[in-house]
Amino acid sequence: MTVGKAAATVVGSFLFMAAAAAAGELTGEEMSSLFHQGNEAFSRANAATDDSVRERLYDKAILSYEKIINDGGVRNARLYYNLANAYFLREDVGRAILNYRRAEKLDSANGDIKKNLAFARSRRMDKVKLKTEKRVLQTLFFWHYDFSIKTRFTLSCLFFAVVCVSLTVMVWLGRSAPVTVIAVVSGILTICFFGSVMFDAHTKAHKICGVITATEVVAHQADWQKSPASFKEPLHAGTEFDLLEQRPGWLHIKLADNSDGWLPDDAAEVI
Image (cartoon, rainbow, N blue to C red; front, top):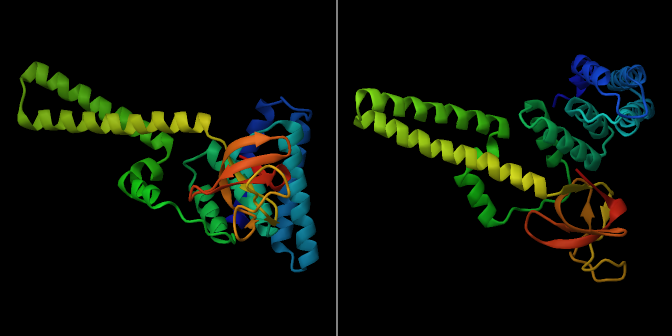
């Protein structure tokens, strides 16, 4: 885990954001001050030996970071990453995963975010298994699921450039088997990677995801408290879902195994 180092690695990037974005109720100077207060509290909490002091300092860091987000209107991957680290060390797995996911959404290529998110996921209680079909797809199309959208777009551009160069060579020097093979393979890879990017962009534009933040919650078969439970056991903090529908006071969710249920909307947050 790298959570202990997070506060010391983001000061410069946030100051740029604070200076550039004055969209919220806070000034850049106020956001910078809050950020430094949060970082200081985070560092002191890491060094504290008394549990009550450590928890109080993590809470102070969380309040500082959330005030920047909520009142300052800042949406910054490093800020969400810091907030997630503080929640994780405060043993709030649900809000840790929520904010790691928000950080990942803004910076999908960051290795630290991915590593800490994976570790936080390993600490949640609910173990929802992927459907067999989805596991097979993730194995066959590993590059779609494992590579960031930036990497896939870069590769599609590189392979397209190879196609253009190959076609130019064939026009000027004539067609040959090696050049033809290179052009065809590069063309197929261009279509695969660019198609993956377009599919991802379309999916992210239309799919809303969320995370359960309540310690424990019963999912129901309908949007009222006395309806039958959807599962034998309650769901717990950190369980991720896709949002199917939202009604006043309720969220209709789908889990990774395609099971679904209704939750009170104060038991979870969307990403």
